[in-house]
Length: 512
Image 1 (cartoon, one colour):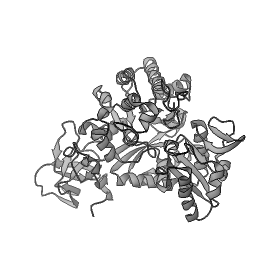
Image 2 (cartoon, one colour):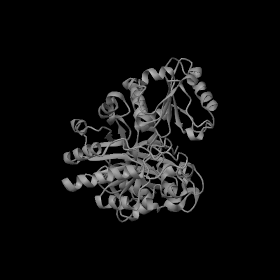
Image 3 (cartoon, one colour):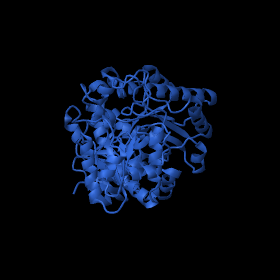
Image 4 (spheres, rainbow, N blue to C red):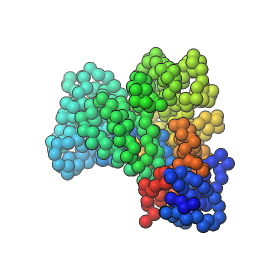
């Protein structure tokens, strides 16, 4: 047989149940048809000499706000700004460079890293806008700020929670999920389908460059009318990677009407750390009067989980702090007690600050935990970091206890929450293995599983993806070093993608 593709001379880490290793892979019609060791005289239309480099199953990012991620790739990065003046200068430069009166996006904004500890207001942004509409998105996506032209399009009622005011007038800052999500939905809803699609396509291309062959994409919620859902369902087959669609709606019937086997995603039961809206048992160190917000009552949460379970589709929601995790995990317990267990693979997104009891319940209920190592990579150190500042060291050490969760026998899949953190699965794997704060570090095998085997299981695609085995899709990522060999040193962070291959087609080549 003449194959379509042959990958030879590779250090093939299969991630099958026996962790077999090979040095060549043969591909036909988009699937792996043979693997082996030693020399092969097989013929193929395309031969890739891996030259001893490491061949992994195609990587998956299991939590991406696809549209917002694309916006970040086209926005003004504000993460290194230290003052309001720095922010305004960076935005002014873009506003003067761009023609017309379109949107200018400021991204990766963390107000706690700004000397004034706030966002620019609408009038400050008006001074530098050069006729443009401006929106600044929080790094967490749980807050935003706009100029006066943006206020008109955001169209958030003044009496909404989180609408900041100056002298009784809305100042363009939206600092709660209610106000910031409405503002975002109306802003993005003002864009054309082609403008929205460019952001989606840019995200997919970027993910491929980082070794991802699949994404669990979150759609709905952030575009008025949920037009992004219809776009991805209509055009998704043209993307270079697989896009597993999570419809972020509280109305399960909407997902069923579109033939989707899952509902939810980042439907927020609580908020985020930097906005002091993640729902904790104890107050924040830097905001001792606050311990976060629960946005929905128990019956609202029960309704969506119960409806999804009854309809036989997967469900997942956002729960960061202990109180939100409690609300969701006891809802799953109630629904499963009433309706019985089914192999629906319900998930919890984030699960950042769980108690030991919540970990035990997640195991008993068979839940999948979709977690984001990039959070602690950016914001936690063995000593210091934003998590310690806001939560204190004891709670910072309890954030993302990957080792305790995996030891409990729970399936964990890894993602970025992009644009909250970047799509960088290799960096996330490195951080899980050799993080600055070793309190949560795990083995190389467990870290790779989060982005391969477990990711495939989390979307019920384990028969087609997640490992290099005959019969599965030829989804393959070739990297320039063996993570097992460099695990003990910081060299593991230097892994680079050489090829990304989707169903036997090269979709990214960094080997030229």
